[in-house]
Length: 475
Image (cartoon, rainbow, N blue to C red; front, side, top):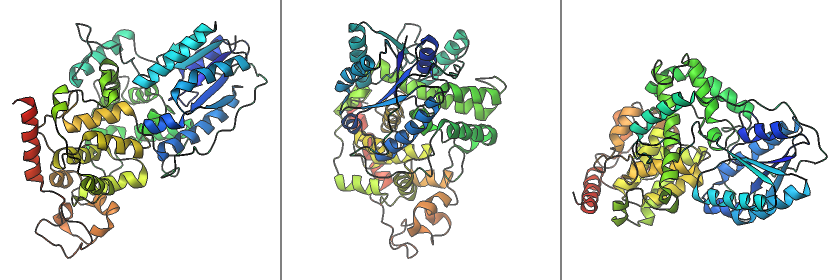
């Protein structure tokens, strides 16, 4: 038996079910493969910073696989519809009788996988698809009537009950090695045509070893105070593990195991910091649960179908101001400039900037969702879509439409001294005191002549957004 292991969003050798099981069943070596699909990636709004991160981690994965005698091959085809033929041809060429992979749950990815499975089974090969991307499979947590959850809190309770019922989710062992075969690994490309733009290898280093050290540093140094410091963007209070989770350089099980070890094995009690971070891992699972249960969210549609009646603004100039960090609201602008410079944005500010776009500028949340995906190193469809629909009040478990963040008070609360704002907006470095949160409150400010005046009035646009939501909801 010589299996073919198909890597996708699981670029690691540790705690990788598909790789572990392939090595366990093999007696004549294992072949690894990764598919590059540039046109499909473009359609899915992947950005240069994410593609660069994936390629660097792919090169590290190839080196790690080489140590256990698994050559990694690279297949390139424009879109998913060419993957089945390419993989089957590769399996035939290298005498692979089985395919092993970890499931992905987005609509296009599931269709691709079904085509691949049909091709392999039709040619007499076996297929082994594993649940590995999440701690619990997205469709395994249901309501008492067997439905998918629409609200996070009851989902979290059911998730915890299910986790305890199945006895946890331990990481699988790392393969020690398989029989060496005469198949040479392909060279991993350093770039893919069409993905030119921001790359930050200095901020987002590659490899499982680095991901583990980043996780260890967070758990040992910041987990205890996570619930207190995670909302302050000028403080290093978050885990910054999201790029590594999205690309599968580290698994959700590994993250949970580290948190449980630090919290004496407790999953829903003990350290507030640990419990809060574990809840964030469960939020990630919830958004994927919604994606599987309500696939319309994969098709540019809101979860709340009433909100399809909303006529969003198409003010492109305002949208460009938001993208460039030139709205006149410092906390929003600093967040957008952080995204442009680092390929990442602090989670509190993702909500603030998204709500400003959808409630104050009343611009379609899908415009913002797409810009984030094109800009984020951790661009994950389910989490990004879920976050945007939450902020726009169109999603499951969304913020009530009358809840509209005030960007000035958000800045005053979470960046009281203006350290984060000044870091990303040099035009405001001379502004002192509370004026940093809204420098043009009283007209022109001579300390920041180059900083734009507010694009809109928060109070007025907030009420306009509420009125528009009331109209479509009939309330």
